[in-house]
Length: 335
Image (cartoon, rainbow, N blue to C red; front, side, top):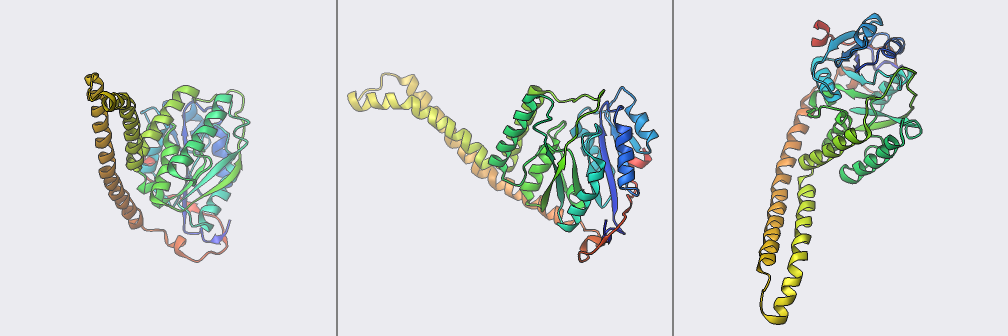
């Protein structure tokens, strides 16, 4: 990799793991070979199969996160580790460590805050047809709600700048964390890039932890919550329109009868339709008010992001690159 651009930069490789003893050793060794001076951190999420031991034997710094869920692990990693560039990947061997160098190069040359390694062939190797269909539907839904910035929001292979990591207010607890990362970048209009990479198959003895329906429901709920927080006007306007349509549906026959006879015989229906219309107006008003609040929160996040200093090596003009230095130890090393 280019030399002058990366001499003074530190890289941390972050590997969240849950029962990946069959693969984590090879994954750690692969990253050590690709990025020999990077610090490799494995966060074990209550594994019962010896994942932590295999990671330590391979030379990784190992920390245990007791709260179950990938989101909890990533939040802890981002808080603990201090580096200039972060690479996050899964410990199941489906992402090639050899591609990490290209992710870093793209992050530097594009001056991006996040590079997503989109998965080539993921639909053909999603394990089950439900996973493949869910990938397509959720990516389409994301682009409809949050914009066209990403084509694979569920990729677990990403590179980040320090600015992104230290300004990312992670709140999700599970596999929805990748969606939250994407929304954070879209919300603050951060410079991002995508890099298409091969997506491998799990070796024998390694099993997916995803549940098609359970995790799909969690991701759908996260979409709704993120839309409420980041696009409240659109969120509450959609609900307001639903109540208004219901109100008009109940109101129409009552009004028709009134114009014909001058009487309102179905008073309960009229009261219900009026109540639904009032709720619709209140929801629309809430959307208008919360939209201003959401804009103010986004501005504060943006100001915090801008206030984080970029490493001096990233301020220099683009030039040839080379090896990177070891990441500064954070709290994780002490653990």
